[in-house]
Image (cartoon, rainbow, N blue to C red; front, side, top):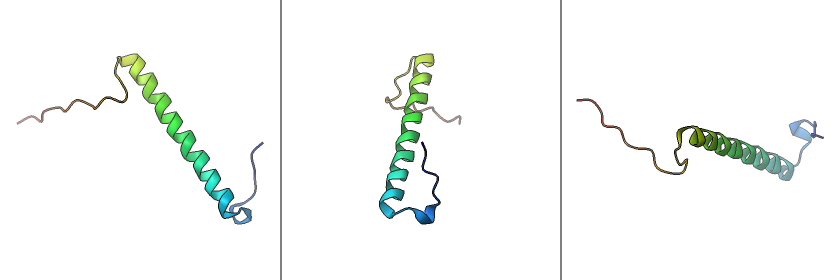
Length: 56
């Protein structure tokens, strides 16, 4: 169950933990999305992207 207290009622440690959880969840979602794109395109998500030449 989520903690529904307002920000003013949370300690610094609780705020830091909530921020760590949000950042971790966002990072995992980005990795999942990269994995899905790699499966579809056959690309390694950790490989550097190819550099495209600019038209003259």
